[in-house]
Image (tube, rainbow, N blue to C red; front, side, top):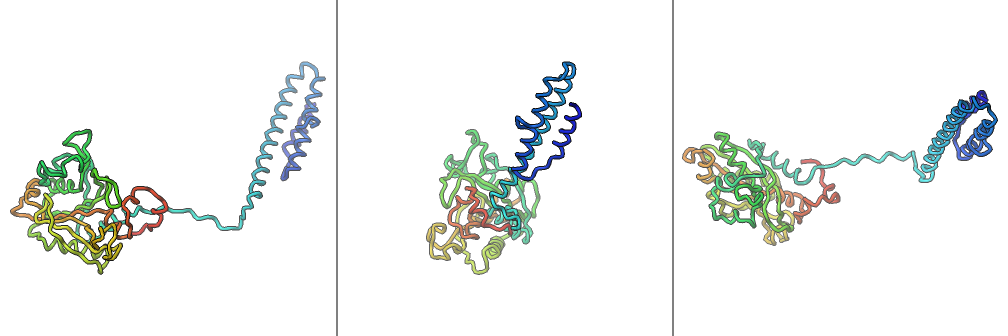
Length: 340
């Protein structure tokens, strides 16, 4: 009987199957009620008592071997059958892997950095969770200034001295305290304000602050710097205007407008139907701010400006709703190529 078991085991090992009919023949030959393995179990009843234990173990191993091979062959044939059913054309070219691309805000940010780096500006960074001194007081904000009120600022745990920065000007103060003039730097980053979300505003957005401090820096330097930036970013046909304004940390101050690139002056919801879009606030650094930064305003002057990256991006790509930048809609995001 041991010899017969060995012969059947070799037969199981060598049995090849490529079709369902051949698989069924395998089952009938070895595993069906009338198959060779069940027949050996029937003969085991007649074996001597001292041999039953030894032969029973060998027979169980043989049965397990045959069942495992049947299962393996069945899975293989089902897999091939599934491919045939789906009618996959193996001669077709493979589907190319889809690559991701940069967010439009990052594309614009990198472009802004590139333009100002050519003018000699470096890039600085600072904390988003800030204290009152660096975000307001050092920038010449009076204690009763509206920007300090709760409807504009997110305070941390109701602590009036700890807040989410409302502008990247906080980096300007830290930069002046830690570095001697000449200073020429831009400071891109995320800022937070407690505003109603709309097509033109959000509770968080991105800014680029610029600072230039040196001897004999004048308003004409500020004007030419922003004029050059606008032409580089939006094209030589872009019209630019400066409007007098007020900011606590600059004096004199001006807002910079460019002709709306979305409606080309005809009027739309982005330019409030005026044909002009504000892109930056700017001015000469206030003497009090220079003093708070440890710089002598009698010896040095400087200019500063701040612009919203979302606003620049909307104009650059003719986007009329700021909310699209934070909704993570891949249909929107995949339209932008990863080039600056």
